[in-house]
Image (tube, rainbow, N blue to C red; front, side, top):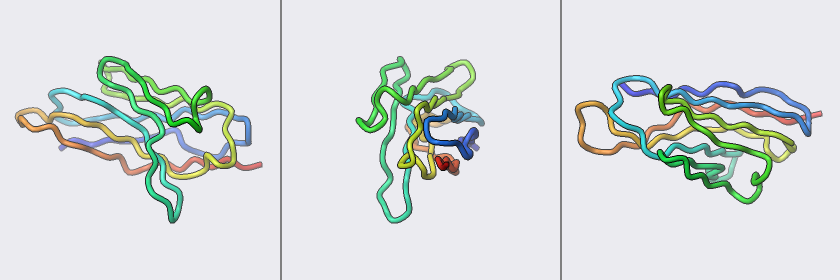
Amino acid sequence: QVQLVESGGGLVQPGGSLRLSCAASGSISSINAMSWSRQAPGKQRELVARISSGGTTYYVSSVKGRFTISRDNNKNTMYLQMNSLKLEDTTVYYCNAVLTPLGIRSVNNYWGQGTQVTVSS
């Protein structure tokens, strides 16, 4: 059973920082791209940042220069360092991993349960 577990969300003042983590556990053969998305109430889920297995990154324009995505392949863990947080960054953040479970040939898409980030003064 493959699981993605996020942690690190919380309440922070505008201009503050948070670091989100996403740990993939279970019987995993390989992990391809990993990403962070966010979804505000009543809105579509938005891709925030993505990192390939080789470390190539992508950021949505609204977070460029403020957020940094990284991963530790030895730990099957991805991070999102969020600096200079703004009120509009408030929402639930979800991690995603495209991976191949052990013993299965197909590549599957997994989501974490989400972690709340609240930016408020």
